[in-house]
Length: 281
Ligand code: NDP
Image 1 (tube, protein in one colour):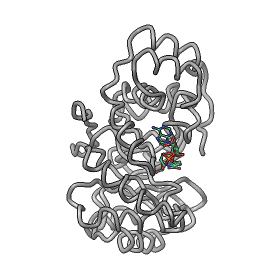
Image 2 (spheres, protein in one colour; image 1 turned 180 degrees about the vertical axis):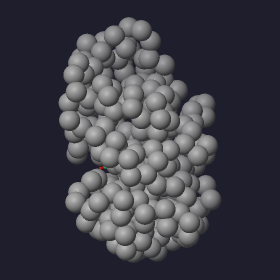
Image 3 (cartoon, rainbow, N blue to C red; image 1 turned 90 degrees about the vertical axis):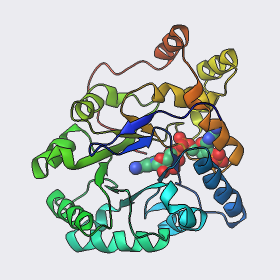
């Protein structure tokens, strides 16, 4: 399995492994269900214990799959789920969380995120998050798809230290956050959860990545993930329904990218030179 993945500290001092597992698009095809369950369980066996899901995924079906796969291993895992913006009112957030808990077969979430920002005033959603925290239904809360201006609004409504994470699109092709969002979060000790770290699988075809993988006796997915894992304060959550690929992704923290490889990646995927609006998938 290689060495233990590094851990990332959350603002309240809890630590989690820097590589976890995504669940978007799982539970869509009945014929893949047993493989998906095996993949999630294997990932946990290998230490990828952060499980990212959302009420949106398969309209609750992904949460139910996680509950089925890992309900009896609750203590080993760190569950992240998300409330849809249209449910994110004071009462709606509590109801959505309770429904997620039922599907996940648990009495609490480790982290609950606002999936993205829409019209509901942030203070309503955050008030509900605080009430859920007081009731023990969530351990902490955070946001997703929040750009710097959104985070500044959030920090004005609630202390920035209450925001336990910001989950955003980040991979070699989508480096915009390095300009301002990543530094903003780092200064305040807010971890980033990098979603679509493989650009939904498309990065594994890229020539620069495949040639580096060949040189380092690694796979393209491992190179793409290892590049993100170099960053402090960033958690990656690749999704795979395939146990072999889960094992492969778990190997990413063992890959050392040297100066030549990093230079080639900088050339193929240049860093941002100016502010760009946060992209979403
Ligand atoms: P990823 O970048 O994780 O890519 C997933 C795709 O890559 C799947 O098609 C998977 O196929 C394939 N794949 C996985 N591992 C490998 C590998 N080693 N080699 C080749 N292909 C591979 O995309 P996601 O969009 O799923 O992002 C990850 C997670 O982030 C999501 O599942 C979700 O939990 C979260 N997310 C959050 C968002 C938000 O708005 N907050 C938005 C998007 C994602 P297969 O399963 O067949 O292996």
